[in-house]
Image (tube, rainbow, N blue to C red; front, side, top):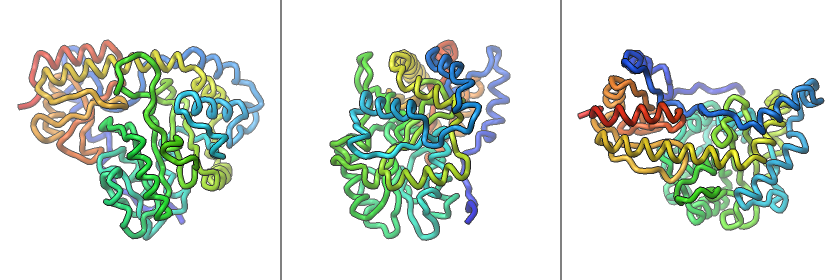
Length: 381
């Protein structure tokens, strides 16, 4: 069966008119919309990429399941940063070509289709729904932490969790995650937890490396990976979006057939990128530096938005300020902000037209300039 049709408001070309206006600003356009990293790739990662440029995994076909070095780096990273022992769980490991293809193909790789229901947060990354549509399944948008809103719905086969959330920054506690896992297991549904922003945890003020709770943590999964998958990406922690380095770990009875399917369709991380990925997972000092940059930018953006009349607060996690539009309509505010030369994301992309998403993935200079512009002109009435 081929891909089913899909429809979505998630179309960046819809910002073209606003960008044309913003580009006319005397000091140029400041783009705070797409969450694409702008900072340097860590030196350790660049060296690993260069060193691996003529390895057998580069001039020959790369290993679908990942090199031994990469798999060891993934296992070590989960132990050190998430407190998760993948070996004790018997978890399978599947490197993916970026997290987006893992998200968009998930329902299809799980064999879902007509009559199956996929639960997802009502405010969320649009590719969850697109992937469900591609598989021909049905989406149920709800507050996923409210298990009673979906646990008794016929046909639920998969549950998306996203903590920290894109776009809201909401973080789910271990208790909430445990309740989701219990409910999903009772009805035979797979829980897929998108934890791509796990190290971008802003709930404590210190400089130390902290992380949000993992779906595979013992206090969440009760020591078993059964029915659970965790997604992670190096795009944000190590500025490696262009390297296409991400992963799925979890229930090996689910992961193993995924690997076999991916091998046949050529969904394989290039060999040099696998070496770079291992280096990025090992270099936690670089992650700490990047976290500090993002925290500072978020704090500045929150301050600037408040000055301009927005009820902005520091997110619990992730890289975005999710804020209600002053006018009550995202597109009206986008037009007003464009006249200041500032571009942000419309909340409609993520499920609520009354909100804006403001990204911290911009340079320090761009963020400072945006804050200065916001201080000198109210963007919307």
